[in-house]
Amino acid sequence: DQQVKQNSPSLSVQEGRISILNCDYTNSMFDYFLWYKKYPAEGPTFLISISSIKDKNEDGRFTVFLNKSAKHLSLHIVPSQPGDSAVYFCAASTSGTYKYIFGTGTRLKVLA
Amino acid sequence: NAGVTQTPKFQVLKTGQSMTLQCAQDMNHEYMSWYRQDPGMGLRLIHYSVGAGITDQGEVPNGYNVSRSTTEDFPLRLLSAAPSQTSVYFCASSPRPKSLEQFFGPGTRLTVL
Image (cartoon, rainbow over all chains, first blue to last red; front, side):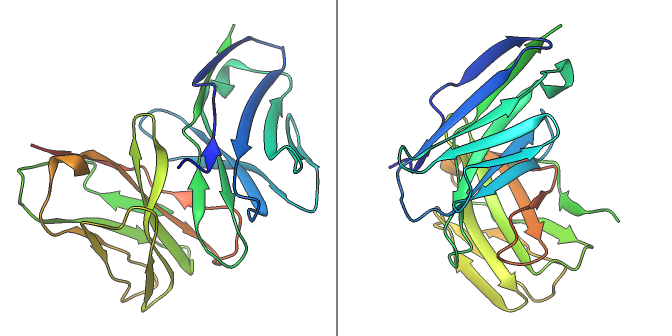
């Protein structure tokens, strides 16, 4: 049973436009959510996070939105740049469990 | 700082062989973990440790052993490799168990024939 789902395996966006990556979860006990970016042949790198007490967190071009009632979060990248082309994973955790559950990833391609 | 290092980068094993994937971090992080990444499956947690001498199981622990004798090292042992363990393995660490951000190593690509 996949507790964290990224239903879009891939996404193509024109440079300068907004990229929106989506993530759904089923476990209502999750209270921390994270996004990681992964380039080929490298390990994932942390991008941005959000706690369940917030509905938005912003860091430069990256904004994460959390809709707890819908059990949905999204990552917005504005403006998108070719260097943003990578696989993006969302992950979720419950306080005190020390376990992180990752989604299957979305491959973003930003076209120049 | 070297960050999180993993050795080897690539490994081919025959079914039934054993081996240890090495992971080390020089950031004095308390929390370390192992994940495997398979096509269409994302990253799945194998084992984790919240400090030296303390380990626990993740989502997919079967077939793997870990130990944490020092803060720096967190080796992953395959006792009897199986083709189902063909995967890319990532080690990660974070300053505290409840820290949101994990730092990942570059990965080890393992093939079991």
